[in-house]
Amino acid sequence: MKGADSLCDTLLANDVRVCFANPGTSEMHFVAALDRKPELRCVLGLYEGVVTGAADGYARMTDHPAATLLHTGPGLANGLANLHNARRARVPMINIVGDHASYHLPLDAPLTTDIESLAAPMSNWVHRIGGPEDVALSTEAAYRAALLPPGIATLILPANAAWGEVVPTRPNRVVLPAPATVSIDIVRKVAAAIRNAPGRVGVLVSGAAAREDCLLIAGQIAAHCDVRLFSEVLVARIERGAGRVAPTRIPYPIDAALELFDDIDVLVLVGAPEPVAFFAYPGKPGRLVRDGCKVLTLARYGEDLKGALEALRDELGATRSQLLPLSKIASEESIPKGKLTDDAIAVMMARKLPENAVVCDEAITSARRFFALSAGAAPHDYLMTTGGAIGDGIPLSIGAAIACPDRKVFNLQADGSAMYTVQGLWTQARENLDVVTIIFANRAYAILQAEMQNVGVKAIGTNARRMLELDEPPLDWVSIARGMGVEAARANSCEEFGDLLDSVLLRRGPFLVEAVI
Image (cartoon, rainbow, N blue to C red; front, top):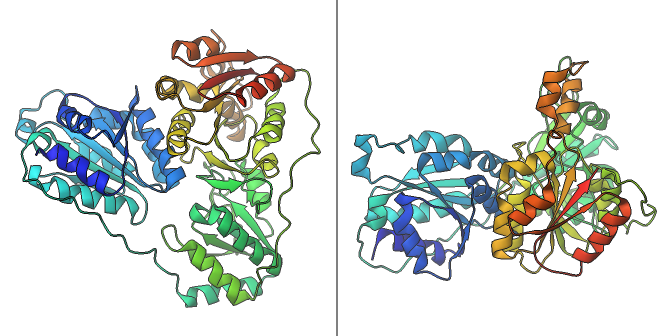
């Protein structure tokens, strides 16, 4: 058998069953091996940023890695922006980057690059396979590295390692240890700090701590000790909706975030890093907590977050019957009418979201109120772009839809960032994914217009406007989507948008709504 077959067999032995791919010549033997393994689903992306972003969405919804297949250093480089987002989301992923045959590298052929240096900033682990006999052990190591703790593993596959012959062997299933348990001393230290600052404690949850079962425990602690619950500014995944505990998301605008933490004396981190400002702003602090706030880590990402929360609940004497008020179905908001606005879309989405949906949010400045409203929507999962590199929304929705084929996926998508990975619409069509893409067509990089003011620029002239506006010519999203094989329609009013939303809820398959706001 060939080294490439050994790689596929090792992936399958460890339940890695999806490969998001954009291959080239160096990977043809791996492609041939994939052809011999129909149980390993191959999903083609027409741009590497689609490939890496889709693997991110898949991992967020399964807690398990997919593989990506990328062509040498330039192919990897094309996917780095969404690898950055995936790394910030702290998800497991196995990148397989093909390279020239090892003996061809000294010739410095046109595609020869320093793949290790390209991969390192966006990877938690990088390894080059030495030869065909090294493939299986290297793949096992990549799988282990992707999950302990979850992160990005990049495996470089020289062409001669893929086409070289190896003795057939039974692939090994990697046995992973249970997540590390948090020590009782840490639990007691955190509990003492909470007791000593009644009413002035915040708990910031992320990762598994943002799932329904952990949120329930955190809610019991909050109810018992008058603690406030927060989620990160950029949410990798949170289980949201009516009947669930709803943390307050830290706002993106720096002044609002500083105000949120102004009366917090103790901030407890559960699977999250300390929150900081997204950028440096003149005359404003980088840390969001005020000086003197005690920041304590109960448990780090990759540790047993649920066990840590349970231990803290027991140490504090909270009972399972003590609960924060759970979110209720939102009914106070009237149905918007007339001119379509981003806020009207947020209201209608929250009212009409079907149960068990997945929402991918890269609306950037648009529909910011949706997250607050979503606390009263039907139970769903909510995902965001996590690293600030735009162009993740469409790929995230692809990965989520492949991970959860029985769930409807909605992508709330800004028009400017959608253009970074617009090729993903073609993948949605090819795979017939049940994804509804809602384009907020404000025809501008609105986030940058706001940031000009945040950094102190008072006036925006012709040159600046031409770099921030997308209206000359305007993007025709209906035509773009149809050109990619996705059905689409345009909404100019609340009534038109509501009718389109009702219709997509009754059908399956990809659909794009251009919401002109």
